Image (cartoon, rainbow, N blue to C red; front, top):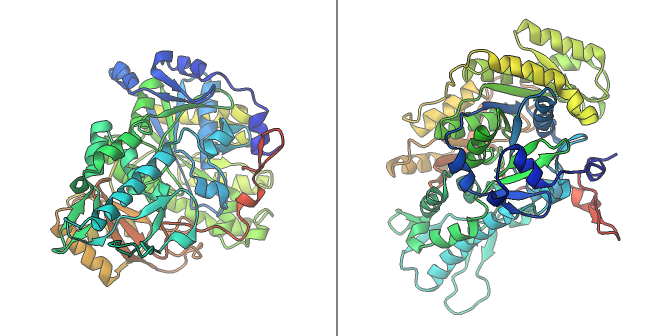
Length: 554
């Protein structure tokens, strides 16, 4: 059966019953049908004195184009913990429509380790991303309206882009205002995908609605004739934008197929933005359960680094343990085995690609100072020889491997990892070490991430990017963290450089100030903030039948 068929053939519990497991009163829910609800801000106020549970971060090796099942493993761990009698909760990101209709598919897990209702979550869900898109484009409309009516702020260079939650390469660079109407000012513009919008990052990093409004007002929309920044608050846009986002700020409650509670909220891309769910959702989850299982997008070089250096620093969080997800096929892929052959046994290819896993483990253990467990997401093409080799090699480095079979078996296939995780978490908590100090200059911060996490020998910065770095530091933004936008497929900035055998440098093509989100985005290689569709997009196979049932989402 497909993931969608498995989800449809599973009976869900009423979301009020799921809330009751967490001792959330029905009056503190805003129901979106029988299986989805928003959680009122009153809940956190009621449970603020509760002791925090344990925080477990799920990350991964560098993925293949189809992903390695990080969300599936996150769900499996939560279900496995519930099966052995613990009280877990998931804290996940919301899927973007771009990948759903593109190549990667949805983000609700797989097989018998899914959150549900699967098709709702992968499509419109509770409208959070639509609200972000509307708030983003309202600001764009207000910018162009201000220019049309005389440009009192003397805007010369507009840096704010429009957004859309779909993959559409045609919108990366566009011309607007071509109607030839009197006084209309044509200008070059462009679109980001909505989950890469600064407003998505702001929503995920805001403490409450007042902090949300403050951050929205601090968005730099462009520069005036004197090269001074112009802010969204200069247009009085922050109030209306906050109104559009007031419901989106509330976390969403859903469930796994085995009825484990899940808070799903926010969804920034980790190869472009910071790749973690909201601070509000994570903090709420920690107060509601004994174990909070959360994930950070793509590999540990992207999502985990940003989770730790940006989100944990901001929210004063430290994971009690980190799970690094790997697959045999991905390790062989990184060892140079052709895509069409990675399902065949190949110990030499596995040996060649295992360095990718070692690098991520070393980063977690020794660079960040955290406890780590490797989860092997088992495929039916994996052989005993390959699994045993991986287990033995990791044991030499003092790292345990857990074989997870939850895609096929649900929580039964995650008992081992649940038990190993409980044992690991019970060991003394370690102190989180950041990769850079905020007081270091922007270039030093970029260089430290490049050398320590990506294992580059250095960085190369284009002249335009150098000028912007000097400008941002002069404006007083030099102490912000850096959010590096890089390909997910390689530790380098070259997506084709899978097996790294010689020194490389990270090429910095641009830097973008996100004053509202309070970080600086560093654009490397040929990364795009608006993805495109593949030759055969998933959208071609998504349909609805005569009974109103959706088919084709994976």
